[in-house]
Amino acid sequence: MNLLDTLASCAGDWRGTSTLQDPHANIADVSPSTATVTALPEGQVRLDDTWAYRGKPQHGSLLVTCDGSLVTASWTDTWHTPNQPMVCFGPAAAVLSVDGRAGHSTDDALSRAGSVRASV
Image (cartoon, rainbow, N blue to C red; front, side, top):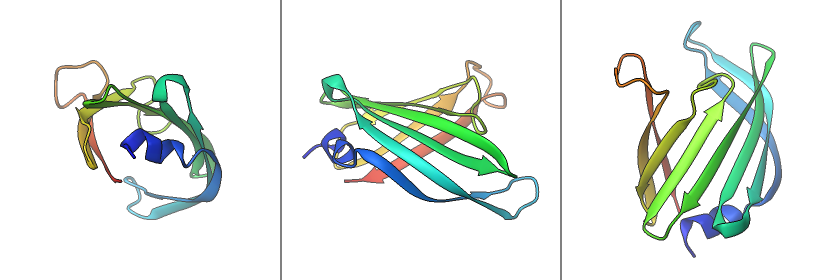
């Protein structure tokens, strides 16, 4: 079973709790959250999520694709990367570890960097 098969097997609606370590107040901000995992044609998987920050509703989306040797993930949400999707990519393997950058700036100080790690 490859990474996308594993993600696709989680298709459906999920509910839980989101905890965001508030970078401004240095305290945990906890809210109810939802996630919907959808298996798309061509083996793509999309995850849509909702949560809140300081009582304000937030939402995001992650699209994961794989061409057999390369996994690509496009991610954005209303709090972390509004209007600046982060595109991450890395080799398809049993452990996925990719780095990405949000925005279109070539200046590291103006772009957000992040990483995703998932074990399958």
